Structures are given as C-alpha cells and as structure tokens.
Image 1: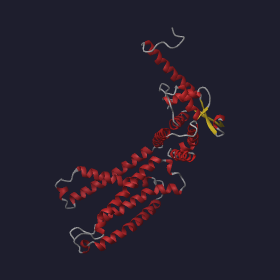
Image 2: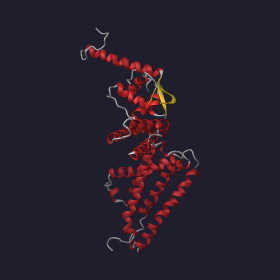
Image 3: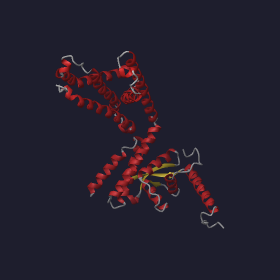
Amino acid sequence: MKNENEKVFLFYKRLISLYPQTFTERFGESMEQTFNDVCNERNGEISLGLMVSIFAETSVGIMRENLHEFKRANQMDYWINTIGLAAIFSGLFSAAFFWIGTFYLDNPEVRTGNASVIDVVRNGFLMALFLTPIVSGLRSRESTATKDWLVPLGAATLFSMMLIAPFAWMEWSNNPLTQTGESQFPYPLFLALLLLPILVFLGTTPILRTLITGKSLMAYPFSLLLRVGFLSVLAMDWAFLIKKHIPMFLGRVSGL
Amino acid sequence: MFEKDQKQSLTPAVFHILLALSVEELHGYRIMKQVEVDSSRKVKMGAGTLYGSLKRMLDAKLVEECDKRVDPELGDERRIYYKITGLGKKALSAELERYRSIVNLAQELKLLPKTFSYEK
C-alpha cells in the first residue's frame, strides 16, 4: 500500500512539472504538501475516485496556466506571426510554380484551367505546414550572425544527403527503367526526401540549443508541443515516402 | 485585473479564498478546508484551482505571502501562509455589498423572505 501511495505521489509530482516553470517554482512545493495533506486526511488510503478527480482537476489547471503563460509571453503572437510568414512564403512559392506551369511548362491541366483552386490551396497549406518549423527556427536566430545559421543549414544538408544516399544508390542500381533511360531518375521524389530531414533538423535546432544552454524545455510547453507536433508530421511524411517507394528502390517495378 | 474595476464581480474561488483569509492567515490546505466549511461543502476546491487563483490574487495584490512556518497539526513541514491585503479586504467588502444589494432586490420583489433580524 505504501509503495502504491509513493507511486501515486511521484506521478502527481511529474504531473505538476507540466505547469509553466515559473508556476512550478513558486507553487510546486506547496501543491505537493497539499496533495500529501489530502491523502493523509484519509489515513493514507487514496481511492481511485479521489485520484481521478485530483488528476483531472490538476490537468485542467495545467492547461489553463499554460494557456495563460502562452498569451502572457506573447507566444500566441509569435506563432501567429510565424505561421503567417510561412503561409506568405508558401503562397508566393505556389504562385511561382503555378505561373511557371502555365507559361513555361506544357501542363495541359493548367492550360485548360482544370487545375482546381482547391488543389492549389491545399498544396499551399501543406507547404506552409512544412515551412513553419524552419521559419520558426530562423526567427529564433534573428539576433545572431548569418554564419550562425549557415553552419546548422550546412550540417542539416550533409546529414540529409547521407540519409538518402543509400536509397538513391538503390534506385540508380536496381531500377531497370532508370538504367535503360525509359524513365527519368525521380529527382522530385529525392528533392522531397532531401528537404524533409533538413526541415526536421533545423526545426529541432532551437530545442537542442535550449538543452545545451541548460535551460528547461518546459519553460514554454505549448510552443514545445506545437514544434514537436510539426516535426513529427514531417518525420512521418518522410518515413511514409520511403515506405511507399521501397519496392521501386528494390527494383520491383510494376510490369516487370 | 481586479483593482482596475471594482464593479467587476469576483469569481467564486477568489471570493471564498478572500473570505477564508479575512479571519486569519492560512496555508493552502487550510484555505481549502475553510472554503469547504464556509460554503457548507458546496464549494470544493482542488489544488489546481486553489493555487491558480492564488497566483492571480498575488499578482493583483489581493493577498500576500507571509513567512513559512509549521502547522503543528500537520507535521513539521514548513508551509507558506497567505494573508489578505487592504486591497483584498476592499474587494471582499465590495463583493459582499453587491450580494446584499441583490438580496435586498430579491426581497423587494418578494422572491425571498426577509432574513435579516434588523429588517422589519
């Protein structure tokens, strides 16, 4: 029973650490004492119902305080501006590709007007999703010298190239259609495979910098959650692309 | 947020915390218990609500922290005590006055029986 209570107390302590750092530093100890007092008034027997109600109420408090801290620290403005900038960049890229497709490439869908606006908007949205972590990473370096972000960009590119090199080699050596010249080397695919890890690497850089400087990652949990969410989507997209094209890399091309 | 406009009513949690502290300085757990007693167990406050409210009340200077001391009934751990400030007393009085006006209006509208002994 004593072990069970200790586990519950440890879990509660970990739960409290999800509050904003300033809140935990100020009230963490008091909250632990209060939790102990509530448990002790029941002679140390913590019922399931009590546990659930305490944890639920604390979780609501965590969300409320983090949202309050998020707004207070202008994190809301930071992310609105970051996503807005990413949306502007992606809109410009989409417009550029659309214009190139209309006037320089023989794209019958664009020429005949069959390319739907919804597809353009969706692609712009997806591009904004990809660009947001890199814009956020760049904005967090606003006050540093250019060389301070060229180095991570170079490292990210090198890392990404090493990551996709085996698949490029497999595609080149195993795909008979590529070898005979019947189909082109899938440059757009490998460009996507190259860019996604670069974006993940650059999006992760602020997190790594926070850890290296010894600061707490939980100082801004909502920002961390958003950043991790975006990076997870990018990583899963990369993994999905690899999985989808593995048969092609292994030379199992349809029709052969 | 509170001192800016005293016409703004207090949340139930803040009101009960101020009421509890109006009598004596208390630490977190005692505030929770006093609120339960004052509200006849109708208001039950968890630690999340309590300390979230205390943070906002400290920022608004309705309450302040006192020195850490031991509560003999709860062991020898030192605890932070809180006390109501002058601004907190004003906010509490304003809120009680608001409640009195509402009760008087309800009595005039014959929605409530007369309850105060000095009333005819």
